[in-house]
Image (tube, rainbow, N blue to C red; front, side):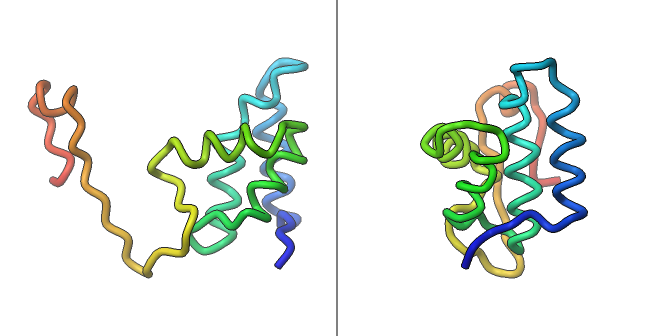
Length: 100
């Protein structure tokens, strides 16, 4: 499988990267990974990570580092209903419940 942004998502990717100053388009890595994950039905195959890296002119390892760090990105297929529970200390201290 070779990942290619759909024409609609390619336009969105260009719009996201255009929000950043010249030379700083790599800052659009999060929204582009999100677009790719949505296009791939909820997960990021390696082809999609490579496509985002190529689009932004970044090394693939840098994009993979971002994708593997953030829990909102799935590097393996997930089920139709994917439930995550936030258990971060700052929210607990603030008395914010993430499950409501």
